[in-house]
Length: 278
Image (cartoon, rainbow, N blue to C red; front, top):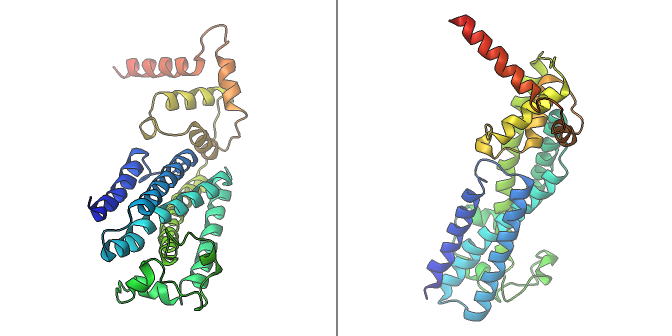
């Protein structure tokens, strides 16, 4: 068994899972949670394998602790942070924008405190290899050089301490990109909403009917759009606050006549207009 090749296939598994969950384009709370579970299991399996089989040679050991494990652990830290951020995220777009800005500021402070002047960070960024044996092989960590006390909590049979530091760097960079994209997305949305003077002039039930029709027909994000987000977008665009859309929708099912009054009306007025055009 060539461990080096087998371990590198782990990165392909992560990439495939991210594609499967459509995490390249968007990350929801449920997707982040599923990715966390996937990565935790992957890391546990890797640990079990290393403890049982070990490494083929020193090069494989360095490769594992410098490249493979930090990628898995870094992604795990990253998705865990996304899950934490998104579960506490406000609904209002303008407030949400400020929320992401706040997290980005905290991330930048973290960079200045832990990375900017750190010698290991400079070593890693410079792609140096001269201290790889010291940093990325088991049992080489010097406890007298003033490293973080976290070293006493890690498993000495499955960590060199510095693999964790690389994982932190990877997760930091991923989270920074994620927050920048979110801020850019909501900056555009906020500007559009502020400048919009569109007002919804039909009933709330009419709008809820339209939202559900768009959601259930898969008309938004190829059917992967969350109804909560779709509803939030319409509320922001039209300056309207919808009450409990789920209960309102279920009440529509008990309508005496048509259950889709508004959609029927849309179809009727559109057909009438088309006939006039002829």
